[in-house]
Length: 132
Ligand code: GN1
Ligand code: CA
Ligand code: CA
Image 1: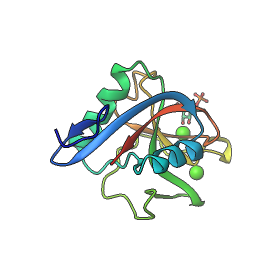
Image 2: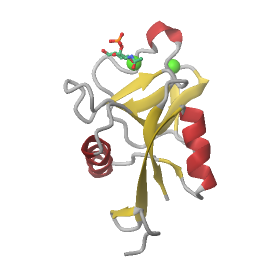
Image 3: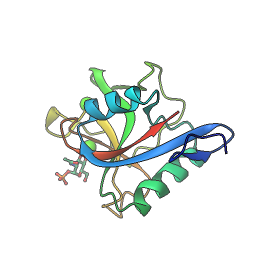
């Protein structure tokens, strides 16, 4: 297909790569950028389902998404700086638990979350998905 070797095509032209190494959110963002990609930006339910299945099938308990409110508390932005067109927070999220959760993630380890999102501490180390 049209994706580099070891990347997976979804949709018309997006390519995804799962990185299993437990990594902080900021370092995950940089690693994706160093591959000419970005930390995955979820734009639709179809893309959300695809990426959730990818991380769940790899056995990840948590996995970073490209969305954070590090810039301004309560304002979650994509790595591009844009407001997200699509969100799928679990009910009660984002809750900025202990006033220190600024990075979005999937929580496959929590069956009650399904493919819904949580905000978690950015310094936690999780697998992640890059997109290009
Ligand atoms: C987790 O560990 P606990 O239950 O206090 C999660 C929070 C979620 C919460 C939802 C570090 O908190 O972000 O809002 O579950 N904490 C971490 O129940 O991921
Ligand atoms: Ca926050
Ligand atoms: Ca949370």
